[in-house]
Amino acid sequence: MVSTKTVVAAALLASTSNAFVAPNVGSVRSTTTSLNAIRRGGRGPRGPVRQTEYKPPMNDEINHSEVRVNVATKDGKDEPLGILSKADALAKAKELGGLDLILINDNSDPPVCKIVDYSKYRYAQEKKRKEKAKNSKATEIKEVKMSYKIGDHDYTVRLKAATKF
Image (cartoon, rainbow, N blue to C red; front, side, top):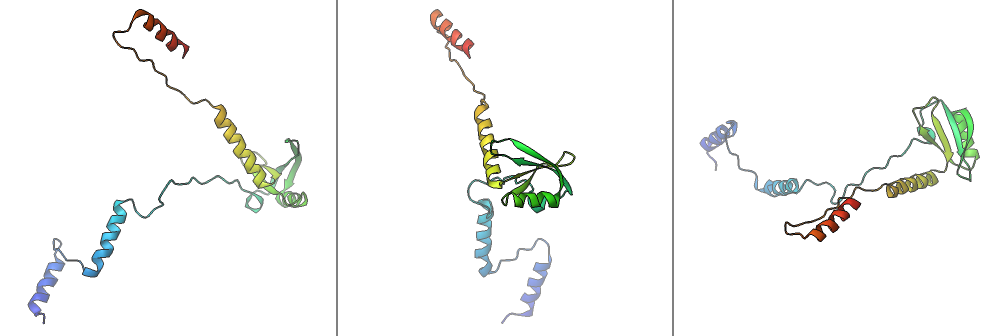
């Protein structure tokens, strides 16, 4: 039996701000695991975070009433169809074989759209991006090591190597 004095003493201890209240034995395990999860960085993804790919607005996602429409031809050039309403442009895309109407430039007046298969468009964009990355030359740091006891001939050879950089 618990006396009323211990209940009152426990209530007084719990009401003070500096009181220590022992946790329930059943909840000790869950608090320990949550503390461990916080220590190791939470319960987020394990591994590299994948960057979300930019997907241009297409078909019904386009919010403009009139658009300038281009069609991709087989030789790789774009053929302009002119300024069409959004409904006419979507109908033309369906008529040309179920292609997609992709918003290319939102800032122009009227916005520019292209009728093309989205998977082919994405493949071409990825190919352009990789080619651009391949052609851009990364900055390279080259160094020449010389000691204080270097000979005259070795000094001139290394000086010529340094000027070639």
